[in-house]
Figure (cartoon, chains in turn purple, yellow):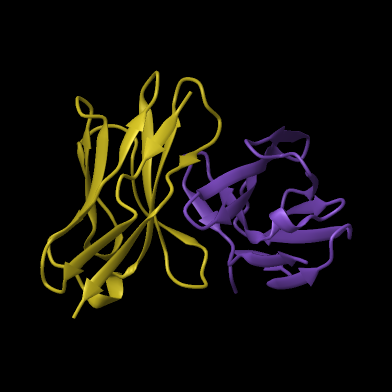
Length: 111
Length: 114
């Protein structure tokens, strides 16, 4: 089984809808991250969490929120989706040496 | 602030030839440096990292990278490219003294031609 799983893998939604992306990890790490990937822009950090009580904004947090339900679970929400949030979203977890382990990604399309 | 640059969007190399994917960084302190690879429709996979010590770092699949402090570079290299090395490569940096998270470059698409 994969160490980092993301659901759903693909999602098409409409402008204004609320959507949640979920991430689970079995690596036992405290640190978890949400990234967004757009062509030519690399990965941009949305939110990160170093433990269940530690939530931090990344470089592009506007329009997004997160919830760290447990050490192993970190979900990303778009309260009111807009078309420019169409992107590939990755969850990751890391050890204390910063090596990050990524999920397979969620392809989100907002119409 | 920390930043990382990958000056080439695309690198093409013939199979069997050596390959280099370039990365330069900017930090105010000392860096942690990383290379990741992304195959189509997959998440990023860790290749190698520089934390401290030997400037030449060896990683997965025969890749290596050299940390050059004076040139603030961390180029990825492989002596003999394979067609299966074709993928998107990302460099990442964290300033040890001041940052809690990584900053990723924009990525370099490597194509190895048969």
